[in-house]
Image 1 (cartoon, helix red, strand yellow):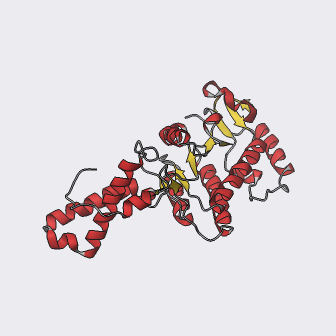
Image 2 (cartoon, rainbow, N blue to C red; image 1 turned 90 degrees about the horizontal axis):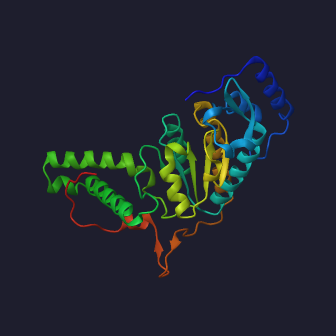
Image 3 (spheres, rainbow, N blue to C red; image 1 turned 180 degrees about the horizontal axis):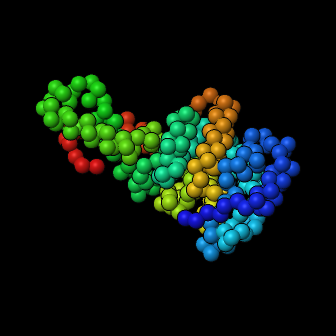
Length: 289
């Protein structure tokens, strides 16, 4: 993907804009100068743009779009306010990106805030097929418990126990980030919508609000809270995710005494992947994921 590179003239123009707003650091701590330095304004080639991004384009240089960072700050603050409110309400925020530049930071922020995440592979139905996904997580947790207690070692050969251990490792690679996720999180945060389109579609199908970094080649209507910016630069991704972490931590600090936030079903019973994962399972045998 070709990104625009700053020219001396354009850089001075954007720097002047950033300096003029430098004192206007928002309540969320977002800083337009930091975004500029992180390269958040570099869009894709103009020929690949999505027309819906027109309101967020500052200019075009050498065939590539430059994103208007004043608009980025506004939309970013709106997104951070929503994430903070969601966390304050005791709801979970699912952080998603299997993109190479983002997945390590996604996992870091999720673990720091005790939020669920998907950073390796999105399996179809992770949100929309709770019975199947919950069943796999239940099986995984049961295996982990039996391995830790020594039950598997007492019943199976060393080779079979080793296979169980390998299976646990493989399953944790896929399901580890959502083992304690509620059946319906309060929001889904995504880095790179096209790369994680299945997660976005499942969230929208369940009417779960989507917060996402939106580059110049992406339809902003796919997110309820679009954040127009470069979604390819590691510095930009790390900066925005840093803001996201602060927003979540700030929201959690305002949370009332913890209550059961799982979604009620038509029968009035609670349904969560976590609850399903805690139910007992039948005798296990090594199986493929």
